[in-house]
Image (tube, rainbow, N blue to C red; front, top):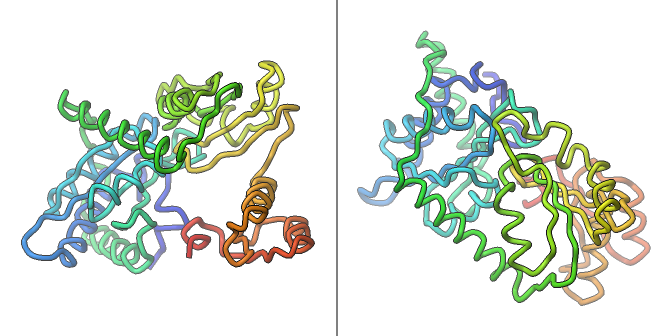
Length: 325
């Protein structure tokens, strides 16, 4: 059986297998049925869905929701929401699963779905395999795979609910994560990649006191990740220097990735970020076990630099869920 779920969900060109409407419906039905089999009592399982700003996101989310409801579960939309935001909402709303409709840093023609477990972590591989099996069985049955899904047109109530969920997520970031953090006096350039962070990130950092220069915050359905965001972080460096800013942050389309530029416009990549965080935490006795977890793609230089400080680097397979494990 062909594997459909990779290290970060199921991706493809929107409108083509496995990202056609009928296959997405099948995935939604399958997910709901497997969740129902685990649910206690007669309660209908709840799935929380969010999407980035691609033009295909609305109809894919609609097809997913149709399948989820056909499978016996409820589906609540958070509207345009970052991947970490959906993970958070899945956990705090007591949902049985969360689904993000996004292809991350890919161009707008692509899309995908990634599924979260009730604790906000990525869904286990076993459940993904079950959904794959259901999709392949449905495909072998010869059901047409190109049936369109109607566009999502959120009601006023749905839009209000999505706004409430976004506000709740921002409160969590500012309060529970920030824990009194203030950025007063800092000038920060943020590149939101015309993606899911376009409204959330400027609002959050402004609330924390930063002077924010937000760029690429006008999504039109097709400009997500186009010549902007974390794939083009060098341009962020130019913007930081041009604005005389202290720091630059570049997100990808669903804002589960961030790269940085310093005040001189120099790129601070993932390994450099791990180095800075490890030193910060270690100096305060907060680096548990004096260990850092990275992927097999991290530079040997990071490993040697950490070792010189007495810090061990552990490597995991590529994929955030493997790093988390």
